[in-house]
Length: 171
Image (cartoon, rainbow, N blue to C red; front, side):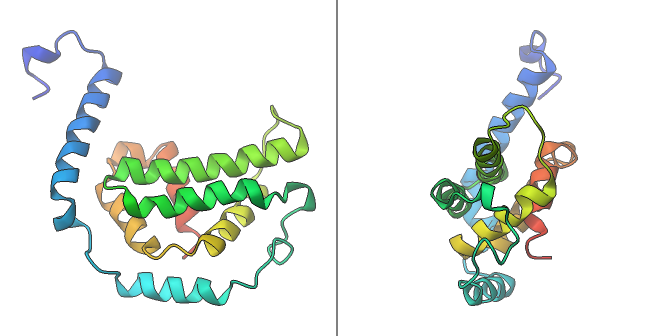
């Protein structure tokens, strides 16, 4: 495919985009065959554990008061739940990216420091809190699906960073 003359005038970024779209198309067509139909045991176990944690407050997670904005965090929760509806690794990981970006932007908004960095210590507790509050039913299956099908080059970059942060919630 790549050696075809159709792709002679296409740069590497455009070629990656084309290959991503082809991959997405194929995965959508075979999704029911490659994604577990029912919750796996680890999904149920994780779900049952986070249901027990429903009493948790931001204070329990040592989230700094200045970062607390549960209205904004609700959007991150919705993005995490949206993963169940998505059918490709890229669209599922985009839900993770949107959730993390929402949290990071909330930190920046709450502190008024838009150009300064943030630390994992600032946003991981909020990410874990949003996972607890959203109670995703297919959390483990979604992570495993992404890990098994995400292009290895992408999993080493920023996608891998986002995935590793989410995965740390259940490891």
